[in-house]
Length: 156
Image 1 (cartoon, rainbow, N blue to C red):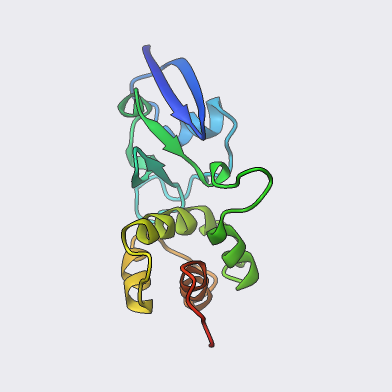
Image 2: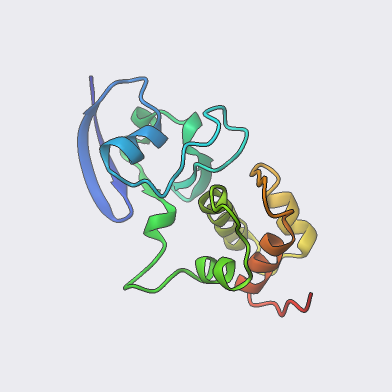
């Protein structure tokens, strides 16, 4: 067992973990933060995307011990004082989800994009989200939601 200290969604946790425990399983199974889904366990789908020290990562490809001393933000940590994050609101308002399985990862990857590029084009959004798979929506409403969250008027 290895002792870790990690700040998740503003709360610091100190735990003993198996060195091979994936961050996604630590978040879900140890901390009960089930908003980060386990998708493919191979880093192909992006459903488990979280923010690790300011960078978007697929938590199924990071060991919990690698997050020691780090700060993690999950989709559950985006809302503040009962108010959704603008991306969460935009996904809801623009119907950018169907089954919702990919939504946490899409929102976290989009958040990373908007930090780097607050005024993206539709092509910028598509490129930034290409590591996140959705099997339901066809992506159009997802792109529209990200553009709307950036403050752009989306007409179609």
